[in-house]
Length: 166
Image (tube, rainbow, N blue to C red):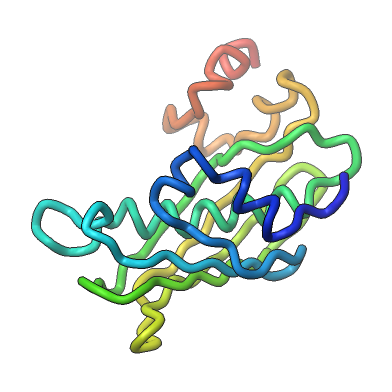
């Protein structure tokens, strides 16, 4: 697979959630992804503060794009298995920036970390981590799920039937 460019990634998000929210990828390399998101009224929660989902979407989008840039030969895609976010602050104006980096790039899994900051103040607003299963064939996804997720009944909907076969 040819590496995707910043322009291609931004086009990929156009008409989808990343484009609708206003996420703009500014750097795309296999070991570092960057993007910005201007704070707009549609990103706020009813209480007037930045909606946590807006922050998670920004971080998750960049980690996903980074995963795409690192898919091994023969991979058809990936699925998000688990994500975690810790919100340390909020903002009402300005812009958000995110830097995503791989913590682990493997043949069957990838782990990505992201830090979301407020552009104007430099304050860290959120820390994010996600674990992704590399797809080779639909049957292999159930094998990628860690037993602790299966035991807790946390299974992505697209592989629920495959897990039942396991």
